[in-house]
Picture 1 (tube, rainbow, N blue to C red):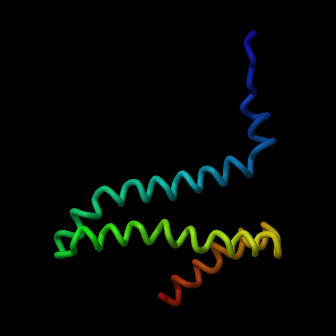
Picture 2 (cartoon, one colour):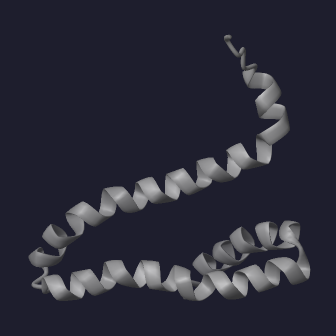
Length: 98
């Protein structure tokens, strides 16, 4: 009993899921590369390990705090506008340098 899986059939059916998972994997890989060297980098500036721990924790805490309003906005305005609006806001935030 062998099951033959056709990649292109799966790709065409679940393409948005592949794209979103790729983005999430890239973000998590970035965090995974930064977090291990952050204590060494912080020590070179004289920052305590407690403050470095708070910095790492703040990323997760910010995600927890923003996930609920983001979910509400998603239900209210739809996924497309939120998925387009998020990168647009980030782009213009970087331009203004807030």
